[in-house]
Length: 111
Length: 113
Figure (cartoon, rainbow over the protein chains, first blue to last red):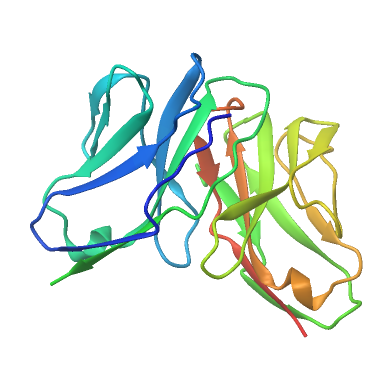
C-alpha cells in the first residue's frame, strides 16, 4: 500500500485549470493510482484511475510519469461546483486489503 | 439500482446507549467496509468484509462490531456509545479489494451526548 502525500488545501478561480499533485515514493509495481472526490456531506466518489502515462475521462485527466513516484490530477476549467476534497490513493488492483484515505486536498474554487 | 444505502441519516444517542447503523448494497459486491470521518480529517477504516460470513478489523475497530450474514447487508453496531464516537459514518462496497473502485453511501451523522 503506497503512502501518499498531497497538499492540504488549494485555491483557484472559475475557469482556471487546477493541478493537484500527489507524491507516492514507495509505490509498488502492482499499485494503481486512484483519485476520489468528496463534496460536503456526501461520501467520496471515484474520479479516475491510472497506472502510468496519461488517462483522461469526462471529469479529469491523470498524469503519471515514468518513475511513477508522483501523479497529477488535472481538472480543466473548474467551476464553483468543483469545490471539494480530493483524495489520492495508491493500491494494488485486486490486492488483499481495503485502502485507507488520508486527509486529501481541499480545493476551493472562487468566483 | 440504488447503489449503497445507509440508514438512518442522522442519529443522536446518549452515552452508553447502543444502536445499529444499517448499510445495504444492490450491486452484488463481495467487499464492504465501514469508515468514520471526523471534522477536517480523512476517512478511517473501522471494519471490512470480504464476503458473507467474513469480517476483519480496520485501523479503528474498538467500540464497534460488525457481521455479514448476506452479501447485501453489512450493519455496524455500537454496543455502548461514547462521545468519542461522534462522527460521520460511511459505508462502501466494491467488486474487489485494493485499488478497485469503491462505491460509498450517503453517510450517517451520529452525535453522542
